[in-house]
Amino acid sequence: MSTDLKSNQILANLKSSDPEFVLETIENIRESGNPLILEGLCDLLHETPFHEIKKSILNLLSELKNKESIPHLIAAIKNKKYKNEQIDLIACCWQNGLSYNEYLPFFVDLVIHEEFLVSFEAFTVIENLYGQIEEETIEDEIIKINIALRNATDEKAYLLNGLLSLIRDIPEVQEYPL
Image (cartoon, rainbow, N blue to C red; front, side, top):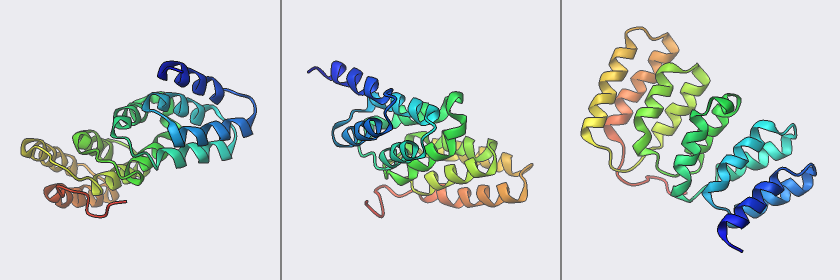
């Protein structure tokens, strides 16, 4: 079976009205899934009323190890459709141990502009970043953070000041491999 046919079958299975079958499908994705299925999983996360299905999807996303999944997860976080799931999706980023270093500006913007719980999760992603980041990017983000500090609430100022020390010392390799 081709990858596209297999992906389409998995996406169709996720739409089943049988919660047990959906949970079984999610478990199968864990074992042999591909990043293209992430949008279907995020749709299901958004639409399902079943707590166990939501929990299973979030567990899967927090254990991703395929770096090709990163842009798909970032797209879901940016998608206004998933606003209610945004905090959980951001938490999956720091939990799965993948490197989101090229998305540093995106996560800094979340810390600056979003409500505190979203900001806190984005801060935690930055806290767990590793890999090469252009010096110019770091300098741009420092400027952005310093500007944001001028009008920040006390709790945001705490996060922003923490970011200033964090982004100067992002390690080249993951310090605590999962």
